[in-house]
Length: 488
Image 1 (cartoon, rainbow, N blue to C red):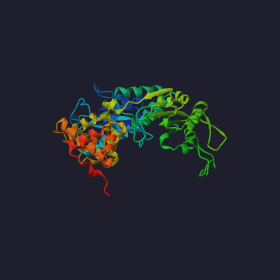
Image 2: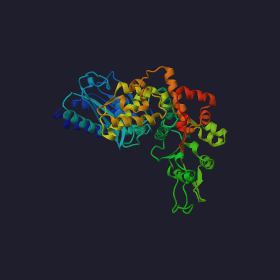
Image 3: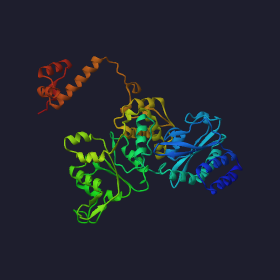
Image 4: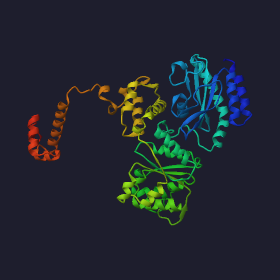
């Protein structure tokens, strides 16, 4: 393919200069790549709401899949990571479909437009040395840049914000193929184009901020600001000023007028995380803004009007809070227009490996590592764990594992001790149940005596047993209570 680049680029430029719809441009583009020595080229477009990349045009690639979830396979990973990828030999990489010629190399490059990833361009190539494949990748990247304007028109025409910005928040797109996540994606797709108020429910760490961002990007406000406020992170003394702003001299330290988050989000979306932590006074003012779309800055008397879509989230039981009076019922019903429940990670086990692969790719890039796969033992540990911290805990554990990995494989021993099982850590107990119960009882009695400074009666009360039973247990285990008494 030594002489190919020039005439391939000329053909591609001719197609691009003609303009037109993607359905017309894409086939001509792929045909030019075939004439230039590539095989079975495929063009995929990203959909951030459905969390997938899907084929829009293909040449000689019949029988292959037509869509991949974000993070799934190489195509799904490139759509997420924005990193070109070369598979030197298809037959030796289980992440890709064999195709008609499994002995070929396969090249994946992102299609970017104004720093957003709109899709992925894929093509097979004859296997060769690394520099030859790198040259082919460069040519394919030029082709992706030439087809990007037509793809951008398709994205704009369907009215959805697709793909993600380079250097976007680390959370990236929503990832998951489980039933629970598919339900979340469908709800986001339904409510996104409207201005309806959304309430996100779920445990801490399930990705509520990520879903709020997806709702914003799927709306007509996607080009306007997306402002985030964590209500639990701000003390009651400043939360009102943060939300509504203040006038100069409103309080000590207010040396100039300051706009609040509602004003900053004008025309866009305001995301209020942990809404259940708002004080009753702030709840009243928030309710007024939601009903009238007006407010006054702290220390001011001028009414400010705003056009803002509000998305809220909470990990707390708002219904119980209404019963005990800590959360206003009228505000709850105003926020709970379109609720979306985010499942805990333990309820979506099928997504754990997709998420783990995504995090490995991200932290490889961030920390300059080269982990290529997760071992079977590590996979077993990840799937078996109950993940009380949900996706956030998985993300943190994968980052740690990537940093401590010594080679290109992430093994089970790279994961923290909290994920280890007795078998994987070599700590399977050899004692029978009674021996282990006696050991536990001994430990509890010693702890109680330490706390009670050797006073048997006080230690017995701590353990909820009588002083007589306490004495029997002390004699059974040969514990000297007097050694826990303070020395004079």
